[in-house]
Length: 322
Image 1 (cartoon, one colour):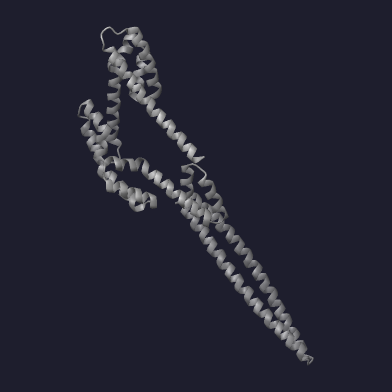
Image 2: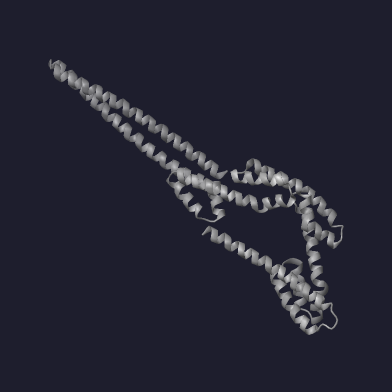
């Protein structure tokens, strides 16, 4: 189920975070042991290789390279990795991440602050990456959340307004990173349920599938799928209306023929001075004329329905492609 998939993903992410922290803690603990007098180099190196192997598998970039170099070296290289190599790799990696922010951040304030932070110490750079970048982006975060408060669905708007009322940088960031998507998913489930209750056969079928699917498929249904399904329903309605128009036109022709036949019978009866037969024929002709007019109206109404459905199909297709 969707909930089971989401729960499984959350568990996997949590385990990954825990493993990363465990590697960091184990490396620092070994570094502390390496600084103690009398530490056994062979034992320390063996344990260091084990944690370096974990680091190489888990981390990327600088920490992965540092761990790989230690694993390919001597016991002394591994011990040096524990003492200084790990911290240097972390510092180099953080510096690279801040350098990336200085060029690639979507926020000018962050780009400027990141460029300035690169002139600082390793600790200052680490502090900027941990919290400073978000503080620099506070105004931009507020703009982004304000846009969601104006343009989002009911749940998104409510969550955005609460985040704006709090105003804290972390609160704004949490909403942008996670809260808006949780609120959007709830809004989209409501929207899909409404389509299931009120839509045509194709829309109902697509909505049912979307409601049982993962969040990304539900989002796809709300953004485009519902409109493609509505187009199919509208095209089906167009076909039905066109068939109804053809049937009504055929019935109109038949009723007109009956009217003409009755008028001919009336004329013949009058010619033979058969007043009763003439009256009956006249009434038949009048009824047939009324029938023909009714069928003509039905045909016109069916034609209007066909045109309306065709326009709805076109509009749905346009919306789905937007």
